[in-house]
Length: 343
Ligand SMILES: [Zn+2]
Image (cartoon, rainbow, N blue to C red; front, side, top):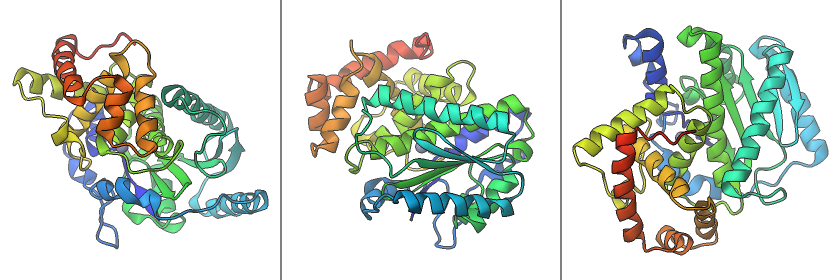
């Protein structure tokens, strides 16, 4: 079972600092160690991205198996606390113990994300994706999320994360806590964080599984996950502001790393440089060309077996070194504009 805990620690830290203006509890962000010696906050992501999805060809559940699974899961969730409900929509099975009206809103978040990802990646209904409808769990309280990771999902290393997705071939699910008692922020901030987690984790799952599931470089995974996350929430977003501030400092110091050196970064939740430049590269590739078709074309070519460089040159119509020259100019201009795309 492959489990990714992909919400980068700096994101939580930025939110925490925003909420409390201090860093007293930052030690609490340290990832928990799993029984297998791995950590839950991204250190093994490289290996996961490279191979874990390919390890198992897990067939979809039959209709009867899916029904049995959902019924049992709903029963098991009672032990977590609160009143659990299951709402099925076109592409998701959404479990939650939040009040029913809010649960309906969460279902809408899920389907909105699905539509957005279809748009960005040019995914068509019926193309390969995840098995069945994807289960997504939203927990009203952080302690309930933790209990679930240990007692039901058998993923204790994820217990200190801000949410994660778990994959076994094309069998995937996403777990998202509302951070009520962990950060003691207001409801609006908790909702914002939970939704950002959905967008981030959902993008990873969708990108990997849309069409063929082949190894994708980390800059692409984390670049796109942040791109979608920030697309929804560009204004006064602490995580986005942190990225922009970091990039501006690097640009001022004339220290923009090469694409080659950043190909498989970020290497973990603490790799701010890796996250920042992965996001910048993705924004460049999506926004700097007249149509928005080139990035999804590139991804399709990678999934068809081309190397990333070949796919990039073919989709964008320039050799990679020329594209990178353009990117370096673009980054400088965006640094001055604060990466404000007028969203
Ligand atoms: Zn991520």
